[in-house]
Length: 265
Image (tube, rainbow, N blue to C red; front, side):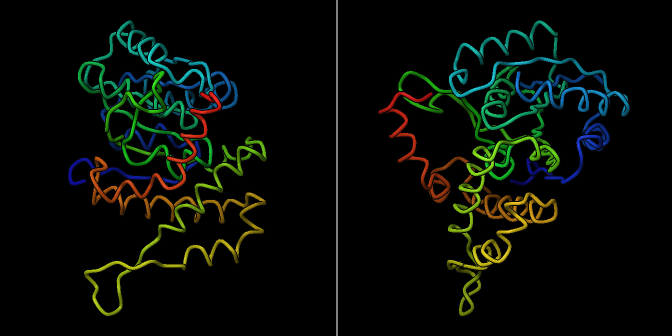
């Protein structure tokens, strides 16, 4: 992505303020979370920012796919404007994929573009939603039909947040991990310019399923990092999904169709 490339760092929440300070001039910022994640982690996030010299404002959205709407998005835009942000004010999304999608879209369009960082707190968001620059909300016609491509300047992965996930929520993330393993590629031994399917990551997952399902930090960090590497390889070749990036929709298209039929979200 050239000058729009960004780091994905694996650090605790307590290091967030210092990480942001490495990339942006310290000053005002806005933290946006939701009513599930906020009570768990907002205090720690805000304390980290303040220790590093930031002056954070805090906004809390309602969580859930049913709140991933144009109304929520416009409400956040107006809140950012109420806070008198300018084009140098970082907006920091702290939450799962619904939160990072809404906040990213608001950042993309408020004042024609604000810098934003993602602090994903679910496994699904850490391996997929927070990386790649897709942002948006749902409409009555379907999911994610109103949005923009807007890259964050930082993705801060704090594996510690996965300890608070329910087993069902954690398994949702594992499904996305398996998708990335299916999509893994490696240079063709006979022609390095070509890529061929690889089973290396899938084999690693099978061999390390015990530590991974027990949420051991080392296994989680390796898994998330490898998924981000696989996704980054696809996104860097097709940022706006005009071709190869459509592969990342594996399973999503059918899933969204089922959701549309049953009325979910």
